[in-house]
Image 1 (cartoon, rainbow, N blue to C red):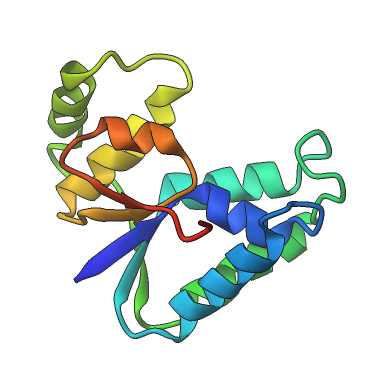
Image 2: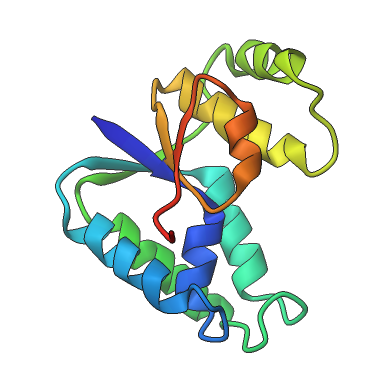
Amino acid sequence: MSYSLDVNLLLYASDRSSPFYERAGTFLQECATDSELCYLAWPTVMSYLRMATHARIFRYPLSPTEALNNIKMFLGFPHIQTLSEGEGFLQIYEEIAGAIPVRGNLVPDAHLVALLKQSEVKTLYSNDTDFRKFSWLTVKNPLI
């Protein structure tokens, strides 16, 4: 069994002003100490680096070094691996995007879902309900 994480959980765990700060941090600690295979997609990592350092998103943004060190620490665990697009990715994205109208803010979600599907990862932890639009994906919210 394996799973992936959405960027919102990483962001909540890094934003002390978030009402989800403690719960997200606890959940990520559990992910880090668990032995179940966890995947972080490169778009998720890059989104985290962009948003965690952005003053309009975080009340107290992280420095680029702090944000990168958070990612490096998390990826330092042997059961946490990265995902990236492989051969045939665009066809999988096209199938996913064709099943529901994908535009605007749903594009990055569909990108992540296509990556998960290509890698046969069927579970995503997220606080974003938009992922429930992709019927084959199991979405779990660890914050409720």
